[in-house]
Length: 429
Image 1 (cartoon, one colour):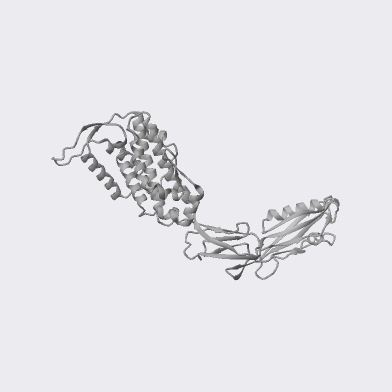
Image 2 (cartoon, one colour):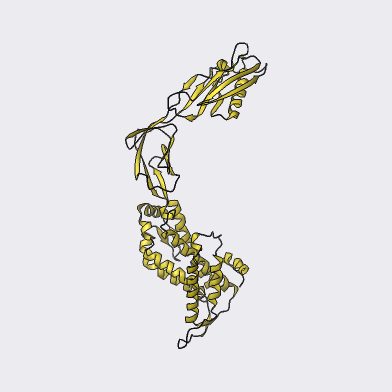
């Protein structure tokens, strides 16, 4: 059977695209081991005559595919390398409305196990409010106004043209837009102060928060006047309403300051301060339940597709759902432990999850123990899926032709598993 036949048939069984993973790549020694196992199987097995109908071909490929998916799922869960499902962690805050926390790096070994924060005040930016003015008034004469803005250590020169017929609000809105387009770390705008009286004022605020020295972050200065009047002084833009200040918080009782409302711990944990709090907020680390649930779902999906495939094939062939019975027999001794960790089994034996119980098991560390590399269920399931991958023909109807003659030296027979196993194994490499 050619590869395009494989690609045509397999979607009929497993209708989701399968991304390649690191578990689908193999060393040369692993490939030789597969070939040796197939060779041994062909030498020791009877010779069968198999009538390969479309349904049978589709089912065999589906069995192989679901076995690979199921084995990869167990390998992913039992993987103990850095970045694997159970080694991924998430940072949790006891009050997300006041403090946020997230990992931004992989090496969390230098982090404290957990810590408490109490926020005295947040960092604030500088805010300047101009004086109130009537919107339709005309405080400025037409002409070119020059002014200077200093932001921290940088100085910017501006030149703004005012029309003869422009009123106060038109000038303020145009000037605000002019400053904002410069993108120099400050934002300007217009705020209505008295709607009935049609009065407004300009404001200018810094993007930055905090000031290490207590000095203003920015300042505006007139550089020339029109009719002895400057645009900064007319709008009173240099009037500081709120001085910049740094955040103040206590980390495990130790007082600290930051210029912004974010800081990092050990270069891998970003903490965001959102609101002052007179109570301690706990920051701790827990397994990434979303990542682990995703890996668990892969196992459940592959197992369920295997069961569904057996039921579908049983409608057109009398194989007595051999694969389903074998899989249930493998998993039956572990059912109580699986159910205690949130697994659920319906009347057909298909798997789903009690999400609350599953997440509790993940957080308590019980799920990791269940799927450790040395766990009996992991060993049994990986061993069983390996058997299925090597010989998927075991699960279809076939007519035995002859037994091998064990009185003579072993010889290779043209056993059909060699064709299927080799074809699909090469596809994943």
